[in-house]
Structures are given as structure tokens and as C-alpha cells.
Length: 370
Image 1: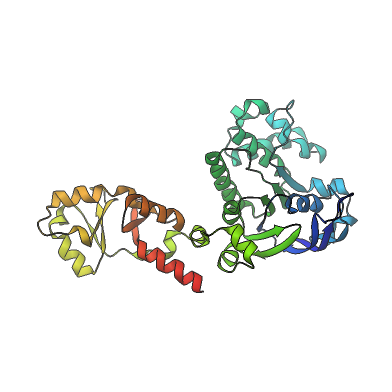
Image 2: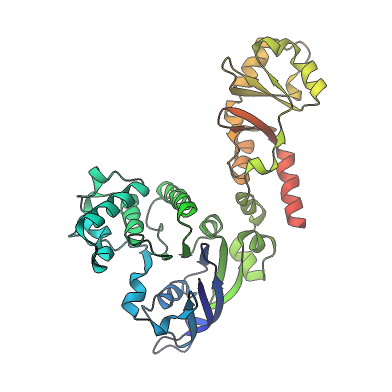
């Protein structure tokens, strides 16, 4: 979708290029995250793609066509652009801000109204409660959402996002990231996303471009970069916890062992024998409705343990029952927080398997060897 060929940008009065000999391909429907220290050329690259600034040398192609052969205004109208400062017009309502580009395209009022309401619903805002508000009446997270809606107004195939979630608190930022990932699964747009946060890059990107002093140092998938850093700069930028970071790329459902043993109240007296028969190191305790309510391990089955004691022990571990969609990094955190040996993996209320601390460690080591 987007090809950068030996692109260089030197600003007037500067000797060092802001972007130097950048060659990179952004695939259709994927998110490429540009990451690196301040001044490494990330935001400049976005502005070059939509011709907000001109290229010193090289070529940029969008869908096989050189952008210098396109009218810059028409080019920008077909590219969604989201910035950290959001850039909502303070004297216009939410609906009017979202409708800016559709109006430039000459859409009629009814088509614009329908599209605005559709987008507000899509980003999780109630159209009735939001469309007539002014930006000053919104929270920072809500304004960011409106900025994303405005960028998507005419359904552009390409979106450029310059630290779009950088101005909000960590909790709101995490929610916005999750919401955008959900939207991207539906939209499948080609996205060039700028951040200085390697954790955000790993979470958001199908591919990551790590830059330094205007030069592309490494370009690859998050797994490739975390597994095989190109040099010491990349290793240092990623951080010494890269193996832990890599756990965020995988979900529990990928590595959980299948369910071998479950027990209800009536089966608690014979749970030790049942676990031995099933060769199970962990056993789900099911409540009266058949839903997983706790977890027992082989270490709990001490001689003389009563059924009531085992039930209370199982129930005390309810926090170690997690959904299979949980990232391995978060799973490791829960294991450490509760001093647990196992996690029970669920699909809704249904038990689907177990994961141990040893299982996560072995998976991490295997992926590193691969």
C-alpha cells in the first residue's frame, strides 16, 4: 500500500538529514509502528507521506502511484490523520468536527448525519449524548476518540497516527489502545503509527520500524525484533526485559494444557484418587451451575484434608481463573502476585485448560531458541 524508496529529508538550515535513505514497505491492511528516541524522524516520515512537507530526495508511492504526481489536497483528503494534540476545532461541535472532510467531499446533510452517528457508535460514544457537545465538554480520552472518528469519516484506506494516545493517562491510554485494536480487526486499514513507547509499539504493531538519528535501524515483526535485535542500540532501546515483553505477543489459549480433571461438591472426598487416575497436577472445582469456581493442585491433597477445607482452598484461588485471551505477560504477573503454581484457563465460564509457571518459562525459552 505504501512504499518509501531511499527517502531523504533535509530541513533548510540543517546539515544532518531528519530522515536518511529510508526504504520501507507498509503492507495493505497492516499497522506499521515507527518508534525511536525524540528527533529520530518518526513524525517527519508521516508528514512526508501526506505531503505536508516535501521530500528532498527519493520517492513515496501509495498504491503504486508516486505521491508527487497527485494533488496534495486531494491526497490528504484520502488519508486519515490523527495527532497527539487531537486538533479538534473548539468552536465546532463533535458532529461538526467529524463532518469536516465529508463536507469537503460534498456529501449531503443526511449522509453526513448517518455517518457521524455510525462513527460515534463505532468508537464507543453515545451519539445522542455526544454529537452536540463542544470539545471543551469532553474528557481527554473522549476527545482522542473523536479525533480518530474524524480521521475515519470518509473511510480512507490509509491512516497516519502521530502519538495519538500520548496525551491521556495510562488507564485511558490502555483502553484506547484496546478499542483501536478492536476497530482495526474490523477496518483492516493500512496504518502508520508513531510512538516513542516500545511497549505500545509491540502491542499495536504488525511490524515495527526502529529509527535513530533519521536512519532505519531495524524493521520487522514484534517477535522478530524481540527475538533477534539488530544491534546494541535496538537491544538497549527494547530493554533488558525483552523476554518478558515477548510474552505479550502470545495468549494463554496457545499454550494451555487440556483439562484433565474437574470435581463438584459430591466428588471432593475422592478428588485425590480422581487426580491420580487422570494424571492431573491441577483440578477445577465446579460450582452447582457447573461453572469453574476454583482450582486445586496436587500439593493441596495432604492426608487428612477434609472436603470442606479443599472446597475453601479451591474458592480462595478464584483470582487464578483467567480467560484464554489473556496475554502470557499478564498471566505471569498473576502467578507472581498470588504466589500460584497454576492458572486455570477459561472460555467464558467453561474450563479449557491449565498453565503452570514452568509451562510459561519453557515456552519462553523455546521461542527464544527458535
